[in-house]
Picture 1 (cartoon, rainbow, N blue to C red):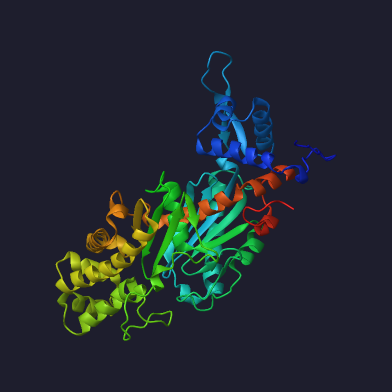
Picture 2: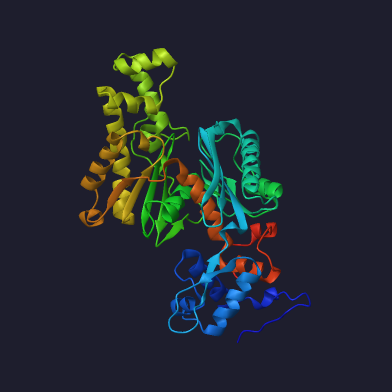
Length: 443
């Protein structure tokens, strides 16, 4: 039986927010946030909770600023009930996606809507101090912009989410031996941002945030088992199983870029191993092979690009392929077959309903995607591909930014943190919640 303890200040004691109380609190909020229920009677019907419990939970969520009443809803015969609304404007999330050669930074409301964003070229190899200092500068500028637009100088930051282009130990928010991020190994990214913004922070691999972005706001909405593959400078995958992002026990699930696809010894990956998928099919590998083709005279178009710019990029190869350059077509097709070969194994093993291909290289044209599709359908089990769709990302460059914001939103509204917020009377600005373990009981 639930016991309520109230302090002299009128706040509910944290110790009573356990068990069914926590679960029902989160259930009510999730129903309103998702739009599945808009009135108290609808919440009752959807959740199976009694009228008194629904009223108590709604009142608690309204008291701490998460819900508010709106217009009158439809009547079922008696007095029309008031609709309930999630207060998406009550605070903001700061989000950033860091790639190998760029950063994308934004301010997002509590429903995942991007309010302001900025992208620019950046070299992740410049190190954490330089890169994060620039990220913080842009976040501060965007936050000031949103506060001015909303005429709310006290608009509160409820959390920060950031995606990094390398393995991240999710529990600590620290990069772990990232191959393309010199100086980042073990760097306390989460702790730095938590101190600066005095708010909870979550850090993950950028491919995981991209997968989450597609799941919450992109082409994977409504799906439960998906595989998101980023093909950029490097290659990585994000796995969603049963509607939940799968990170693995240490947070490095989906690091397919360093899976072996060849026994050849002449191609060494940036991680130091040989035969890695990334070393044959990533953007850097395409640029390397395109440069060789230009220097050796195997491609007139690429040779002209090299003469004009002094370098070759994966985008140059895509443009040359679209112009009919045979060597560029062969390079993209070969890369697609390497990627498709590994994905065929994953499709047979994981059996997703949807494979989403994203990243700068994937968005450069149809040749690579066609090669991936052909190889997956040819080499996977027939049952695994019977209803499988392989499509290009609909969010494109915004997937990682949106996903970083939803990573924070999902974590903020777990039952454990929600219970603490209600007990404290306000959800805003609780940096100590950074260290609340994921989905574990309150002490």
